Image (cartoon, rainbow, N blue to C red):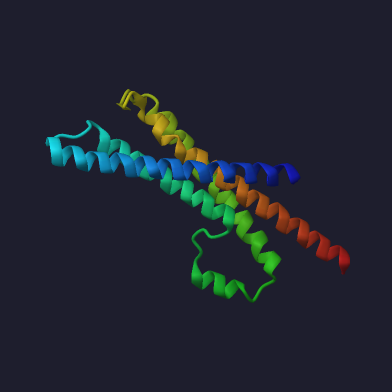
Length: 164
């Protein structure tokens, strides 16, 4: 458990840096494109495609950061009705369901990237499958966060039962 907590924290720190770097790269590239088009009536070939992938990277990094902080998407109706239940039981259920869903998403995203490997397309000499590899990587990181939440909630529930 301690290992998983440290691993998630280290990944969180690295992701914070990465999201800033990729966002600044996105900002710089789009500003450069605007300037080049205004002044020289041309831009950088494939820049728009690269910017689309940068947006995807920033979005997935942001989703993973939100999951770590517990600020990921939450269904208001469900969360209101679950507030009546034991807080740790809700954490246990959410952690379990999220972990199971993320396992399926991870599997599907790995298959997607593996299928993309057969495509020879590249953006700035980088194969497209490498640019799309953020998808399974972030699903794995989010899976680790929700797995940690599930394990922590289970441990707390077990301690509560022992007290009774």
